[in-house]
Image (cartoon, rainbow, N blue to C red; front, side, top):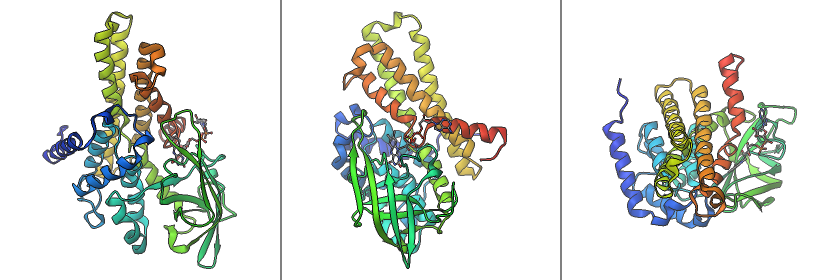
Length: 377
Ligand SMILES: Cc1cc2nc3c(=O)[nH]c(=O)nc-3n(C[C@H](O)[C@H](O)[C@H](O)COP(=O)(O)OP(=O)(O)OC[C@H]3O[C@@H](n4cnc5c(N)ncnc54)[C@H](O)[C@@H]3O)c2cc1C
């Protein structure tokens, strides 16, 4: 058994690291991933990554990738997340929006979207959550009513990241009015310029991230905007969410923050504090555990094994490591952790996001219990 990286992945990581060193402004390392001050830069950076063949390398060649293994997907996630995620919203495009389109889309949809996504040239947003359907996504009530060869969409979405800049929205809506739960839901690829589509920024305590409320008031889209079969969107969503859950390797940045704390500990004399060494070791272990579980999930993907359980375990471990590092940073930094720019401040904010964005962590625990106790998925 070989636990090390292959030469191909080592070379890919080295090339990506060089690219980041050369192209990323130094101050970027101190930003918190998701910080919106940098939107324009993220677009040009993603396009440059694409030009260098480093953006969608794990995609099939015919859609603009290099046919690389899923290991390159996680290598690029680790390197870019550790560097502050300079792809911005574009990480979603390569992680799951593009793959959902090349797996389930029509030729017309592939032609329209994939070249632009693989080129890092378009912003999307994800219209899933509603006020009554967050954790319980299948309770969504946005409707898409068929009218000849069109659909008319009505409803509201909340917490939609990046919508303020998005050209397209990946929208879930109920197409069978008699249905409930996961049945009767379809996916629509909606241009945000369509009449009746409205977006408003929701102010947030996080400050680093802009959320939006989307309103669909008689938004009429042609049938060609529906992704996959009518009423059968849930299977596509399940696979997309599996990519989303481990798509942000937060442990890579949390591990860097842990080492920053260790360095600060030298300067501030924290090593003498009761229990500091143990807590630092626990934070380091939490980051390592998350990394290994993510690798297990990728291994399952590469080998075509079921990955539901390990993806959920990995997501819980990712959230736990973000929180362990945040608590350590906040306890040691004290009030300074409330000041923007401090180690604790950035880590506290990303830890707040970690347990909710991409689905709440408690539901992952439910999912793990269901799979392990054998009562279905
Ligand atoms: C940074 C960030 C970005 C986001 N971006 C987007 C986006 O782009 N598009 C989008 O559609 N959504 C987005 N969201 C929304 C996110 O998907 C939801 O916040 C998440 O699904 C939880 O839904 P909710 O906020 O309605 O919380 P609720 O579902 O109301 O849950 C509140 C709390 O109750 C707990 N809970 C609920 N049900 C159960 C249960 N059955 N068992 C145990 N505990 C339970 C939850 O775990 C949670 O702690 C984003 C959220 C964040 C934080």
